[in-house]
Amino acid sequence: MPLAPISYKTSPLQLVAFNDIEDELFGTPGTPERTEYEDRVTLELLPQSIRAYRLRNHLTQDELGQRLGVQKSQISKLERNSSNVTLDTLRRVFKALNVDVKILLQPALPQT
Image (cartoon, rainbow, N blue to C red):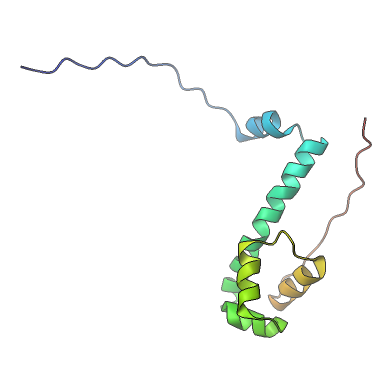
């Protein structure tokens, strides 16, 4: 005996731009909430950037550590989580990787 076809209720797929989702969840660009979100995203990308530049320079964690005078474990830690890293450390790491670092300082928006 043949099986009866399964009936699915369908609804049209609605696509939403990622920027619209960010606006809804974290506020529009320029708001304190959105700025905090964007800063956190940037911090989350630092470990990946350190690793990517290290690999681009064909360096092991141990070799980069030797250039900086630190243990391999410290480089590994930086590549996993850079939330507690100082600006001086970042400057030294990226200098050892032949990468220029520019820090953008912007005045805070007045709170209303």
